[in-house]
Image (cartoon, rainbow, N blue to C red; front, side):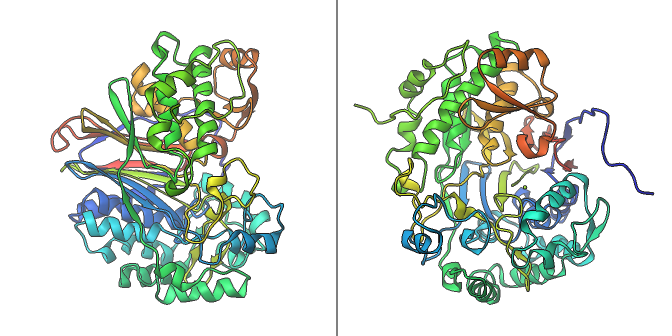
Length: 540
């Protein structure tokens, strides 16, 4: 039987309640994490196992050549991990100007010259070393098994796989790895990735060293050289992820925590800081006033983020200046409740990503995200070990006349990053680990779902299910087709230029949420998983 995999009816997911939970965008990844907990592991062990599996089950979004970030509540405090990689040593402005012309604004979108050093695997190892209970090799067993035996391709992933194929089929290693029959797999078709099993085994047996200076690093160097790239085993061997202190914004009696730049998490903090100057709860949750205020706050946030955020040492302003309450209050005054505007950056100086989360009954919680950036990343796959490489290099600027000169490409520098995990606390205690994936949708999703929970008391699953909007540029936004028609009309009347979109995956991201209900060993947690992906929250 060949089934129709278009679903004509709206369904509502219900939240999951348990003392140990893993919530991811693919059920096999969630179950792999739960297996680690049943084996005696903790939330971090579960997250690493889930992250490894999802490189296989959602290859449109991540792979063994991804970057990653995490925020961990270790039982006493929050700790952040930046596992995003830097530019290769050869990446100067002259390198790109010679190859692509002086007028090219960025490194290429696809291909080997979009690949910076992948940090995700080093991030897994760092998390395991600091917090894990189980041997690192044990955590990769479920992923190795799935790579060897295969899995049946799910609905949403298949749609994005097929959509990406025309653009990427000519990239080195892509067809060999992801088009086993000369095409994308069909829904429910068995996909095996045995070369990735070889790569996972090498990573497991060497605790990541194979990728950072060992056999995989050497294979990547040979492969890059063969296809005109310049990344080397030395670039990989020099890499170490960075432990960082999360930055925070208070909102309605809670504190939202994000990883500091080079990522865009600060955008969610800025938007919330602006919204704290308004009484959102006095407006209807899905009404035009509430949505308009949130859209305008997000525009103001992005105006500053795209102007100033880069590698911290190159930023012209500090995160503290960008989050100064007086500055954000001044930005809030620019919002006109009756008119959409195209905001510019202020002056803060005074004078196809995956997200997953896990929590255990001992109180450890982890908010984790990893990504190849755009669907399938660079499209380039080192075939011997199945290393699907990200295209984070495209986030650099190569334009000396560009607005954000702080993000100019340079050797050893990290590019602007879109992937951001989030964590909510109250009075210094953990409340929720969560994230919403999808390029610049991520801070927008962080803000929209949190507003629903804190201003309107919607539970995490309801806040996750609710229709979303996505700001693009200027006055242009996308809105989900499920949004209230009166609200859509009201936004249009205020000058918002809207495209109504039926493809929720592509434009509106997907989230996973774990809310702590009290003592985790007694009351446990409530989890939500976004219906916009193939995901699932599981627990015991």
